[in-house]
Every structure is written in structure tokens, then in C-alpha cells.
Image 1 (cartoon, rainbow, N blue to C red):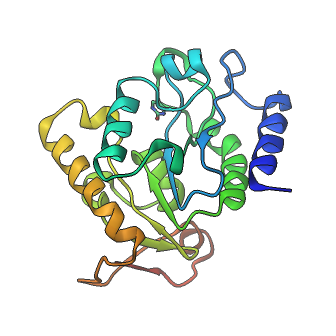
Image 2: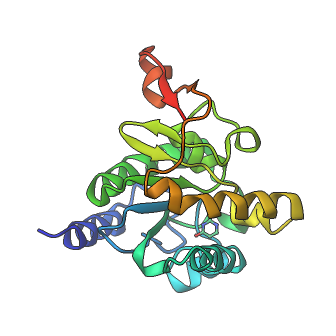
Length: 208
Ligand code: URA
């Protein structure tokens, strides 16, 4: 089976899973290239995403799409999804228990796509990979978790609220091509805790 077929199967499974919370809104599975090297992961669909069944199609999505184009890429060449795949009412933050229930599906989606670089947008997606990271401190850094490069960025909605965050968002975006081609140099090795290290007390992973 192709990755595209596997993703379609996973989507059908999610649609049929009535134990998933937020059933009153539609499932926004994600979209893009099933063979993408780069995977963007947001928080949860909002009003526009719920209406169209596509991720990041509101104002935040416009910014994301514009930034993808600004580095010479196309939205169709990457994959875009969310950690929680149904819209929380009134666009409230997803609850920890909602995130927990959606996590295994995100893990399977990542396993199928198998991207080299994952860009979590905002703290909810970032904390899935890096439970102890802080978005304002760690956005723009490149972490290695389970052999994948994790590059946390501010959520586009946060970037739309202020010039400082917007500029940092754009700066991090501009670094993505170099990160993909492995040109980002290790300046100062640090350490970061991964899910594994916090849960199992395993050695900490490296942070570029
Ligand atoms: N915000 C998100 O986190 N995801 C979307 O798809 C849209 C807005």
C-alpha cells in the first residue's frame, strides 16, 4: 500500500472512532504530500478549518502558506495537520485529556509519512515532542528526537498578534531550507528532555 492509501485508511478509522472527543465538529485529518520531508503540526482546527475540512485555511493559514512560498516551497509539497483533529468549541485551547486521546493517531500519521523534519506550530504541538520546552525560549532551535529534526515555531495566530513574534516566526521560517539540507551548524550543544527521557528517565537527547 502507498503512504497515501495508508493515510486514507487512517482517516477513515478516525472518522469511525466515536470515542474521540469533539464529535460535534468535523474531522480535519490533514493534507499535503504523503511523502513529505517536512511536516507542520498545529494545535486544532478552528472555524474555517471546520467549515472546509482542511487544516490552516484561515488567517493563520494564509500566513503559513505565504511563509512556505517565501522560501520557494509549495504548500502541496509539505504535509500539514494538527494534534487535535476536531475543533474545540469557541476555539478554546484543547484540553489535556483531548490531546491525550488524539495523540496515538498523530503518532501513526507521523509513522506513515515518516518526515525528516517536523515543525510543531505552538506550544501544544511542541510539547508533544518536547514536554519541557518553552515556546518563547526554544522556538527556532533544532532538536533531535527519535532521529527526526524537530523545529518548534510560534503558532501563526500568535505571530499575527504582534510584530516581534511575527519577525521571529519569519526568521525561523527562513532557516528551514538550510535545516532540510543539513546545513545548520551545531553552535552550542545543549540538552533537551524528550517524552522518553521524562517518562523513562533515559539519557537526554542532543539539541543543536
Ligand atoms: N490553528 C491550528 O492550530 N490549526 C489549524 O488548522 C488552524 C488554526
